[in-house]
Amino acid sequence: MPGALKQWPTWPEFTKDKGEAEKEFAQYKKDIAEQYGEAALRQSWVKVCKKLESLTDEIAEKGTSMIPVIPFDEIKDLSPEKRAELQSVGCFVVRGVVDRPTADEWFQNAKTYVADNRSSITGWPAETPFVLKLYWSPTQLAARTHPNHLALQRELNSWWHDASNSTSPDPLSYADGIRIRPPKVSFYGLGPHIDAGSLTRWVDPAYRKVYHKIWEGKPEEHDAYDLELRKDADQAIFGGSAHSSVFRAYQGWTALTESGPQEGSLLLYPDVQTVIAYLLLRPFFQPPKDEAEIMDATKWTFDVSDTWFPGTWRDDSQMLSPSSHPHLRLQECMVNIPRMYPGDTVWWHCDMCHAVEVEHHGQHDSSVVYVAATPTTPTNALYMKAQLHDFLAGRAPEDFKRSGSDESGYKGFLGEKSILSGEEGRRAMGFGLTV
Ligand SMILES: [Fe+2]
Image 1 (tube, rainbow, N blue to C red):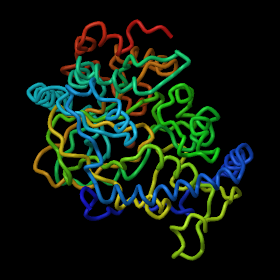
Image 2 (image 1 turned 45 degrees about the vertical axis):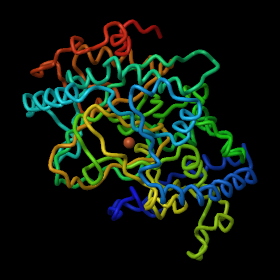
Image 3 (image 1 turned 30 degrees about the vertical axis):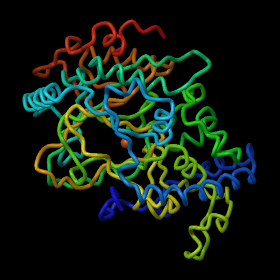
Image 4 (image 1 turned 180 degrees about the vertical axis):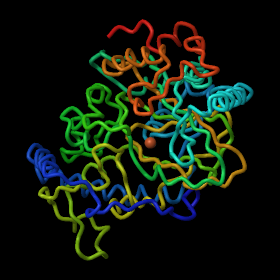
């Protein structure tokens, strides 16, 4: 299996007895069943599981080669067919967004910033922090607002459509952390999951509508790039530090160092349409008693009285595991991204299942800056206005407030002097935004 994990880590299996199950959870299922009907949900369930038979075979066979690799220079001139392919798989590597000397310099600067302020910096996991709760280092600002990066973000944002004209592909610079992961330290914190909220996908009426074709029995017609619907989805109705308040068209890593498989890298499930449909339908069905029939979707029983949403906790990202989501064949279909080099980027659709490798068997730190493609929408712009105030004060942005850090007094904090690309970079950081 090229690209699949040699050994599945001991990530948790999500079972009903350990799940979160409040009385009202069953009502969320009943509301959807009432609106769309059991027949449509069942039709979707069977279609999606059928589709997964061939899709999982393909991913298990092709592995990492499922993830397209595009040189930065070619991203704006893709043929319609190639772009459609990238949209369909929902993840890809864009190489050489900045040149290697620039990325090397960013990494050195980041290490200096961390070393100079070490005693004040916190991170995750607490015992061996390497996902650092830093938001305003010159390296992060440079990565977010480098002209090539902004051009790429704008391009990726434009792959979504919105007939309402209330949004634009103009990139906004959502501030997230930075990772400097040392070798030889195991990390179990990020098993297979999907971000952008969890239970809210079923509960928030606007979010639910994003997936209306799936509820209607036509999962093959689900449009994963409909920003007109998606812009109104509330990802954070239940709160929790795992949920971003902004809509990110694609999440992304910008590599500051070289890193390959088995070196603490990223795993992706390279599909954007079928996996999310399966995830959404799964809570409505109970498995057959006979384990031998588990993979036969027609043997599953429709049931909306059950309060359990597999892998779902209100305040956390949406989790997935082999036993709770068997048709996904996660052990064969979570594939390594290709080897990354300084200045490369990897992108994945906001509905994509992803994970971070438990082991880092390499010799060096593996470092990335989290930079997403974030379009301008009314909700996003509102967040950016508040983020700008936090930035100018050196405070952690709203989505990361719990860390409570104040970088204004850090050695090397340069505030708005760190922004690249002139007015375009300043706009991405929220200056002059009208909301
Ligand atoms: Fe994630």
